[in-house]
Image (tube, rainbow, N blue to C red; front, side, top):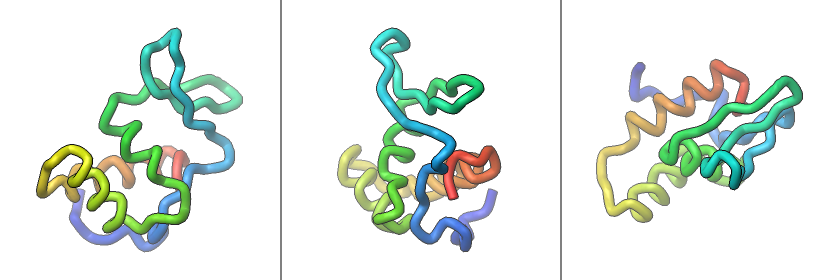
Length: 91
């Protein structure tokens, strides 16, 4: 996947069809939707927690780089957001 900006995701936001929450029984963050749930890995959960429509992609990447004391994670964040968009999780 490319490092190109996602025009439709200037300020990514979770779709109203999904609810992000921590499930104690699963010991993981999940996306709940009417037909079921998606268990997320820790990285996906950290990214999607920031998809509230108030942050642009650069802000999300910056927060994560600060939080994890990491650099160069933009491609991974973009890959996850592109997949989340493809699956209808974010718009």
